[in-house]
Structure formats: C-alpha cells, structure tokens
Amino acid sequence: MSTCGQSLRTWRKTARRESTSSNKALPAEHASADLEPQARFKAAAITALLARTYGEEHAKFLVDAATQEKWDAIEAATRLLRRALILRQLTRHPWRTTGSLLADARRFVGRWLRPPGVTVVLCGADGSGKSTAARAVIDGLEGTFPAQKVRHFHWKPPIFSAKRQAARQPTTDPHSQPPRNPAISLCYFGVHWLEFMLGSHLRLRPVTFRGGLVLIDRYYYDFFVDQRRYRLSVPPFVVRLGHFFLKKPDLVVLLDAPAEVLQARKQEVPLAETERQRQAYLALVKGLRNGRVVDATQPPEKVGADISGAILTFMAERTAKRRRARS
Image (cartoon, rainbow, N blue to C red):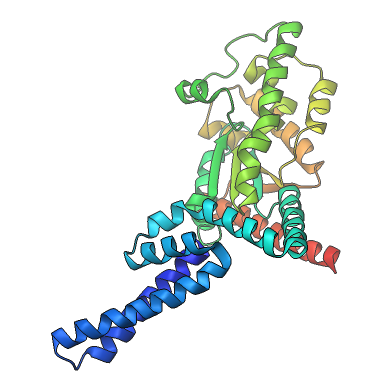
C-alpha cells in the first residue's frame, strides 16, 4: 500500500470512529444527519491538503477512492501519483526537487551495486545434502527472509533454459555419456557462461536488491570440479577466465563429508570419483575468501543451523563494514 493510501485509510477509520463515538447517544436519524456534514468537512480538508502535493484532480480521486475503501485502485495508481508528485514539485521547486531526485538516484545506484540481500552457493559432491540443507536454511531464516523474498535455484538461474531445466529428469548416472570434443565443448561452455552472467544480473540481483536471499545448488563452481557431468572438456584457464568476469556470490558453502558417508547416501559415481570430487571441492572452497566448510555428517537441522549462522554472521560483518566506510 502506498503512503498516501495508508494515510487515507487511517483518516477514514478515524473519521468513522469519531463520528460513531460522537453520535452513539443520538437517535439513528439524527446521527445519520449529523454524520454527513462531518464527513464532507473532513473530506474537503483532506482534499485541500492532498491537492498541494498531487493537484486537485488526483486529490479528489484519492479521497473518493478512500471514502469507498477502494484501496486496490489507489495501489494501482501509485506510479501515476508518483509522476504527478514529481512533475508538480519540479514546476514549483525545480532546484530542490532536482537535488532530491539526484540523491535518490545515487541511493538507487549504491543499493544496486551493494545490495542488502545475500547470495549463497551450496556446493559439494553427490550425497552431501545440498537440497536438504537449502530447505533447512529457508525454514530457519524465515523470520529474516520471508518466503516472498527467497529464491532457490539449481545450478544456475535460468534465462533461456527454463523449460529445458523444468523438463529434465533427475540424474542417476551423471557420467554415463562421454565428453564432447574440445571445440563443441567450448561452444557449450560459452552458452552456459552467458546464462550465468545474464542470470546473475536479471534473476539474482533484483532479489538481493530488495533485501532477499538467493540459494543456489552447485553454481559455476561445478566447472572447476566436475566438467564430466556436463559433458565438457574445457581447459582450466578458460574456466578461471569465465569466473573472473562473473558476479561472485556472497558466500560459498561446502557441505563436506567423508567419501564413504557420501557413497552411503548416493552411489551415482564410483567411490574413487567421490573422493576426488571431495578433495577438489575442499581445495577450491578453502581458497576462496568467501568460502565456508560445514560438516555434512551432522543431522540436517544442525547443518541448516550452521549455514544460517554463517549467513547472519556475514550480514552483521558486512553491515558494520559499510557503516565504517560511511563514517
């Protein structure tokens, strides 16, 4: 609800309450007759007040809509009212309004470049419990990030592969097919990289801009550890170059457990390959400034609590750092 809508709703409730209180001892016909002049007087006063900000036409619309409790109509007119407000202020106070608009633009750009939300990547070998941990984090942080402010993606935020990802069945043998040849692999990798790049700006940043939480399973880091899963054969320096130009998540959390534990949960690849992936993930995440390692042998609720704690600690430290930078 817009500010003007909230104000009008408050006025309407107050007017109704005052009118009811003042006339409750009167007969019904007298109370009704007395109520109408009071309502007209309050409506005229509110209209005159709003006209200073929005103009006569918009003021009458707001008061009429509020009187009839058409709050959806007021909400739908928010953009129109905002434009009317800006144009009216520009014509009456051009310099002051221009300064305010520039200050707002500066705050918008600052929030876009340094959004208040958080992007968290959950990585680990098969069987580490990434999806289970994500659900536990979402439930555990519900008070901080309500459901409408949370997005959970598998691997990458889809831009032009949404239908294909939705139709894809769960993988039970990720290494069943051989890698593509290097030239074709490079083409596929380029398409994947483009979707990662676009998705980070078009799907992730709008969520974090509004102070939301983004959780992603695997993400781009799979290319460092398990290209075979995607039938790729790309030189490591190309993967590192692609990573350099991507927007980095705020936290990269590795769910780590011994290979035997992971194999007991999922046996999609041989034990030796699970151990190789585990060691590769450990080396990768420990080398990241934003990397965290969580013991995935714990019960799911404890794993979720550890990740939630890491997120809240990161947010507190970031807030303190930004305040110091402004002071």
